[in-house]
Image 1: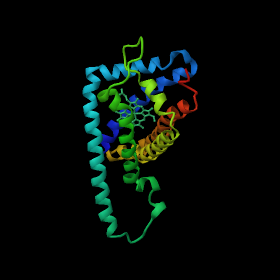
Image 2: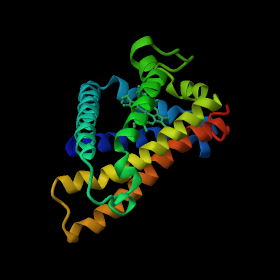
Image 3: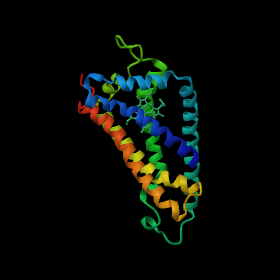
Image 4: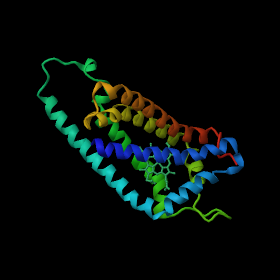
Length: 216
Ligand code: HEM
């Protein structure tokens, strides 16, 4: 789980950086999502990236299966009961609800893939005059003008934050990096990552809904 988790974390870094190109619109509204569209177009047409995409989906599937198997094992152990229930003293609530947080993320992912990946890769996007690439920015602006979808995305990002708060450092512990020399640093980087990345993601639907970007 730790290896697939770290692989998915590396995907999140690339995904958030590419998507953050939409914020160029804040400073140059005339850009109209051009910078983001160029980056997304590269990702959609590069053979290397498209091949890696298969690895990404396989990574997600393995991580999800491993998560449910681990959850089932934990549940069967819990069925036998602990002599002393440490509850909050033993672990944080989000560490004990990784299965639930992961399930919320899975539901988010199904919705998310149907919003963007399916039109981008399967059903096709509208070509916009003068631009020979598919315009994912216009699709984003369209999708994020629905307040219900914006709320669901923000909730998805909150689930991601809590999932990462436990998952990030847990992955390193599993790989054996849990001695006192590294643990403080890993905890610090993990906490910062778990807050910053979901926050930047959440800012995307919010900024579009608020018309801070994409108003042209
Ligand atoms: C909340 C802000 C987010 C926005 C605006 C966003 C936007 C997008 C867009 C536009 C695509 C299609 C890219 C393309 O086809 O070239 C995409 C794909 C994808 N997104 Fe997101 N995303 C967000 C958050 C997330 C999060 C939090 C995750 C994971 C937990 C995620 C996972 C994926 C996956 C797995 C794909 C398909 C693979 C790929 O296209 O590379 N996204 N996203």
